[in-house]
Image (cartoon, rainbow, N blue to C red):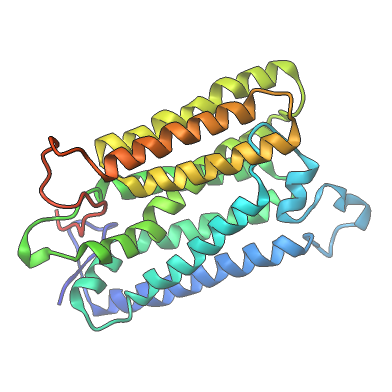
Amino acid sequence: MPYYNPFARQQEATRANVLTYKILTFLTWLLSIVTTLYYTTHVPWDGHEHPSKHHHRHTTFGQSYAHPTPFTINHVFVGIYWIALFFGQLGYIWHLFVSNDAWVRAACSVGPHFILFNLFNFAHIMLWTRSYFILSEIALIINFLQLVSLYIRHALPTTRESQYVSISTIKSIHIPAVSMPLVWTFFAILWNGAVMVHCTNAIACRILANVVIWTIVPFAGIFLFAYGDWTVGFATAFLTAGLGVGQFFLKVFALQWIFAFTIMALVLLSTIAVMYPGPTTSTTGERAPLLTEDA
């Protein structure tokens, strides 16, 4: 059975490609999770440098404590999000190893982008913990663009019976491989960017942050109302709530946490409205993201 390769539209993939997907997907996922967990508790140590030069290096969350910004997210929310993401990704990888051809085809359709996400996440962690914030920001932006490209090409499920994949399968692939990584990368760009420009307590920077935080609304709105993707809505609302909690404990007398909770409420209500449309809304079944693309 032929499998579609999103990186080579005119090339028909073979079972050898699927084997390559299986190996690279698992290895890069393992690289991403091991790196993330390791630097959560360990400070980077490069033996060729003198210990006195390591003062700018921290664990993943230690870097956050060292550089508090208007876009610092509460670490508990970050931890919960990544635990859910890693377990969800493990479920996605499982779809590559089953005997169901439709499941394998759906998983392969996002395989290369999933591999790239893992590699860019690895790069981000390595650079972030070593205070290379400009390079880390570049890695995040490239990762975000490739995830947007993935989303545009895998927006809605096909209705043709020969290519049909169940809604539950689409969710189990789309959520951990597309929507959750996309939402996280968007927030990471804001967070890392604020650290990069040293946005801490300066009044001008705080005012700018009060404006920039509202970009979360159109970000979520595009995917909610253009694609009907409630998975992006819930992920955005969750991280925005984490942003609100983080800002509340960083600076109580400020607008940032108030704006964050306001945005969270707007996104959450919009998500529920999209997920459960009114009786006058014309629907042809449950709106679901992700297309097993064959165009």
